[in-house]
Image 1 (cartoon, one colour):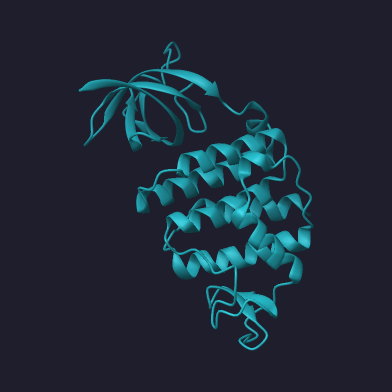
Image 2 (cartoon, rainbow, N blue to C red):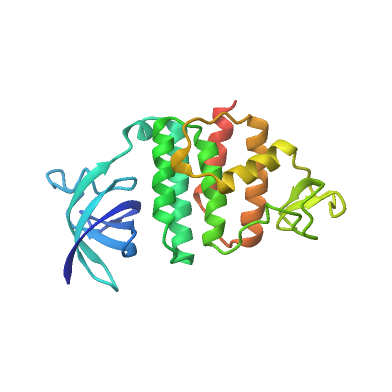
Length: 247
């Protein structure tokens, strides 16, 4: 096995034997890699602190293309300290890790890691986590091959008189094609378009009304259920905690 040194982020961790963990690390060069961190659960292990999810760094390991690679060390670049100390941020970040883990299993396209890291940076900076999460969900639809139609009516192709959005139809709908299967406001339509095209790295400020975010959540939940086949155990936890925070 060859030794490789690559930047990556741990999406998931699983306890293995009495003292080890298996880390699922997303890298640009090798995609999603399963790496065993031997003995990292021992109190004196040098790998203990960094062998966990949401650690972004340079991973040094013995690479095995099929099967488990073996971790040597990690040079931590970021452990997202502000995110891990805030419930709202960590719930959103954990949801994104889970979502990314599912997306990379269905897509080998390059760029997923870049989107995730940009999103986590913005959450760490304190930008609205739920909005950042919505943006990522929209962008990931491209990688899943089921991107919505947001430039014209998804049914007839007209670019004028757009009145709503329809997860059933696969995007925006005009006044002639609208079938009253749930109404989405002009603000929600505007933000759906903006989220889809915006460069996450260039966002410096976010101020989105709660009502708009609820509409976009509704659209994305329905769209993912209909077209992606992505099932997330963390989704209900994410949604329930969001509800509790708003009580």
